[in-house]
Every structure is written in structure tokens, then in C-alpha cells.
Image (cartoon, rainbow, N blue to C red):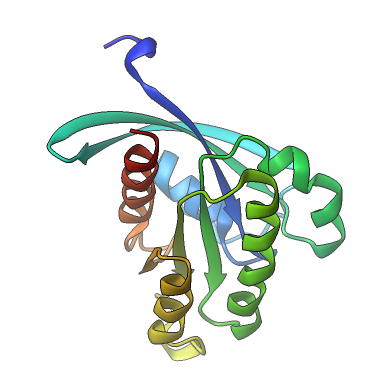
Length: 178
């Protein structure tokens, strides 16, 4: 299969600083986890091909995964360039920090103001830290349902549902573009 047969899509990660966006990307692309926190400076783009089955047809989706710093001061500055041309997004909250779930509403509005109505998949990250989780799975599912989106409890540390998040988004983008 040549590059011309791929569906190439731009995927943006959204969510506050420290929720695990970069760690999820590293787990997905490289299958590694590093718990040292290093803030993302501006934007980093990574790519990986995902195979999805769209109504019985196997589709190869090349995801150009855009990772952005989550610090509030940089949101407005970078928002337009970051979200421009996005085909979908992964909205990440930290299950040990309730505010990060609430902030996703802001991030989604920022995304849709620029990119329009694109598919979103929610990732409730750090689900492996059961004793520290303050966000209920039902709260995550409730927010996702408002956007007609799927939601997964994820852990970049253990790999829990990381592939499923990307595959779900790949399928949603394929269905929308197909």
C-alpha cells in the first residue's frame, strides 16, 4: 500500500497541563511510559498509522498527532494555528483532578470554534491511580455523551485503553470523512 492509499488526518490533543497528553501519545506511538513531567513547549507532531474497520472496509488512517502545551496563557496565542485543519481530537482529563474535566468544555469550544464539528474521543487518564481518583467514570461518560462521543478510562502508565482511544477516534474520523 502506498502513501496515497492512506487517509491522512490531523488529530489534536486537548486538555490542561499535566493531564497526561504527552504520556498517552508516547504510550501509543512508542509503547513507553516515563513518569517524569516535562512540560510540552509549543507543539510537537508525531505520526502513527491506525487500522480501523469502517462498515466492513479496512481503512488505514495515518494520524498526525498534535500535542500542545496545556498552560492557560498559551491557549489563545496558539489556538488557531494548532486547531486549524484538525479532523478530530482526543480530550484528556486527569481522573485525580476534577477541574481538568470541567476545563474540557473550554478546550472543546476552542477546538470547534476553529475546526468546526469534528469527532472527539474522551480519555479519563491516570485511571490506574484508583485510590486518588476523584472524577467518577459516570461524570466522564456524561460529558462525552453531550458531544455524542465515546469515553475511555485510560492509563498511560499501564497502557489501559490507550490503543482503544486512538482506534475509536480513527473510526469516527473515517466515518465522518468517508
